[in-house]
Image (cartoon, rainbow, N blue to C red; front, side, top):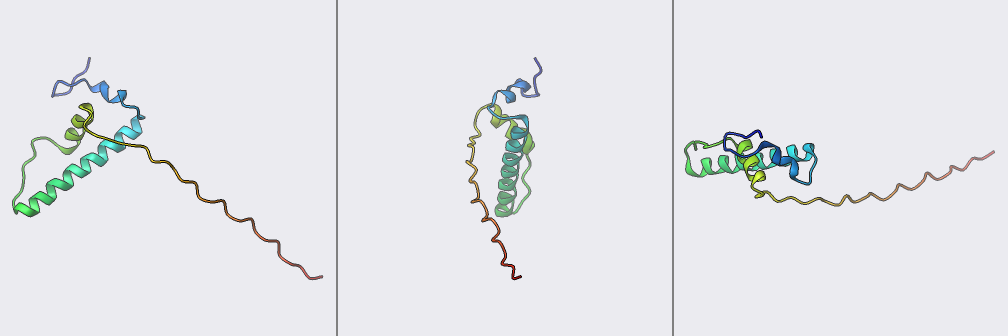
Length: 91
């Protein structure tokens, strides 16, 4: 069994009911949120904040611990366009 530096099995991410592409997008969005919160906090405090771990690693750890929630959106179908009206031809 392959483990990361925190001792968590790496393959467990595939147990989520998502494809590997959806997992990557989910982790990237969460990492972006984490980084944005850090930047906002730095602006409030006025000093640079040192990270204990990178945002991607933190997002991955949260996913492994089932702390990230997600839901699927229902795709709304656009109404079908009206067929073109026949043009009047004068002979």
